[in-house]
Length: 113
Image (cartoon, rainbow, N blue to C red; front, side, top):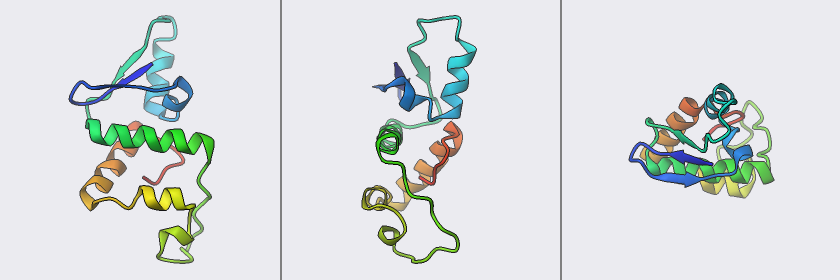
């Protein structure tokens, strides 16, 4: 199956990874009678951001993120979650904000990207 970005770029993704998004899961369930549903448009998600969201979901399927304890035991992300996740959010603030918006729009849980 494929997820289509705002710009029209298609990103191939395993259906189980795509279903981490409640939005996508709902779209697939609505079209359950149409077995040829292979592309889901996500007009609110830029290609660069969608690529990162898919990367996160793929990794989360193979190595779930440890639960973030509250209050935070450290302001250093690498001391709170696994290194991969700490590195993942080590991006420019604008991209991080767009990742958070995309995760909210796509309703990805558990998620903090």
